[in-house]
Image: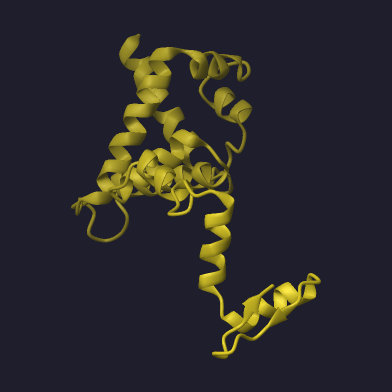
Length: 172
């Protein structure tokens, strides 16, 4: 029973990974469940809550994702082999889930490119200016723009800006 269960789990996981437009006749979980002899999709919902199923799904998706980093030889020279089709389906679903905001899918997708999610998050949130106080930030901004631009911005805010004797703008 366990071997049959695992085979159905794998088939269901791969079906879930397939883009919805490519699912064909079994477009919904209800259709898929009925095609496997279940009355409705309640059993599939139970599977998706089962820790063993969740772990199997994680392992299968990680194994498929790890293939992206290596050159894989497929047995079928004339077209896509079953392994290649399965790989493409899982990768497509992984990308779809990552784009929709699924953090686990995003983490797995980032691993495809040799980066961890935490590294990317840290890089996205870090800044050279994060520990600076407001006066320091304003000074950095003033240095970053041309003196004329900065003087014009102050004038538009009602400040009086006069050029110093040496020709560079001065704020008063």
